[in-house]
Length: 398
Ligand code: PMP
Image (cartoon, rainbow, N blue to C red; front, top):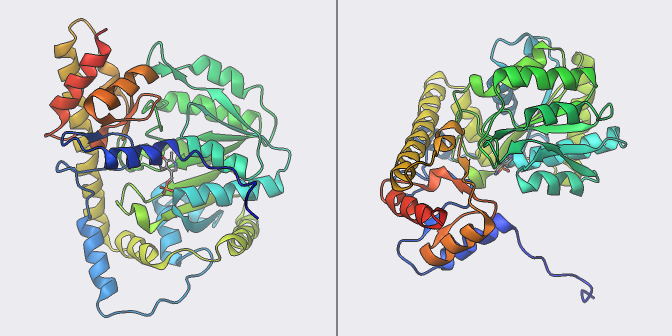
């Protein structure tokens, strides 16, 4: 029956986690997976989440199915965070929003929707991007191409090439953008560059799909959504997928959202209905526990404020680790600049390590990172930073 089924090579990033787990070395380090660990190397359970969970647990509550598009308070929370609580676009009820199974689920529901209603559209992702962007859009039937983005020579962005490339695209082509904390490079567009990119998106009638999985980890909750709010100001109609996996440290609860900015309320209602239809046919309704946690934390002023501060603690620890790694590498390899490490934003840093250097750092030091040289800076802490800096200097020195 299943003799024709081909083996699955495994996901490169999740596979790294398994290899790290199996490595018997005591000083091994996991910089592979995009997960925030605290200074003790532990996955935090945020205080605001603990308080919300206490409310959920006491008294025990029945678990009915949630609505297909999630709890109303959850949907409002996504909208307020992304567009701003008092945004006119929300007052005008122009945004269709659904809860989704993580940010991945938002990408999938959005990609299915776009492929159904814009069957000719192609999808373009940054070169490089989070590998699953390609997987999810291809899985929804898209031909996926790449737009120029990261410039290894400068550790910056190939901005002129990016603009020139976007100008060659067809109306309704999907451009997948990272509003902040670009995964995997950590290199973000400036606000002035966003303005230019969005001008081309508007002029060419492209369909922007903004995927934000790290709101609050870059500059702050508002600056990190500059591109989203600017696109609204410019009158664009577009998609936003968001994830609470990292900023609520709720990875396994699968909490995300998909929002679509529409022309008017009637359009938003139609889109909302089609999103519900898609969801009904895939998984029917989203998970309840995480949904309630998000609803409670985001809609209680005290818990919300506590949450924002807890995100900023994570953000600042990552920034501190970036500074320490940079200082340490510059001390060990005099004459070389590692400024790019502190200029990058969010969890990830493209270190510039070649696949051979990555293979060596894994084999000789038990420091696990993605073959493209991406490290999750949130895997660094006071106990392992010297070890990692030494190892990086060792493989970089030849
Ligand atoms: N988009 C990007 C850019 C991501 O980095 C991630 C998580 N690695 C996701 C989406 C998916 O988020 P989630 O884990 O909530 O599915």
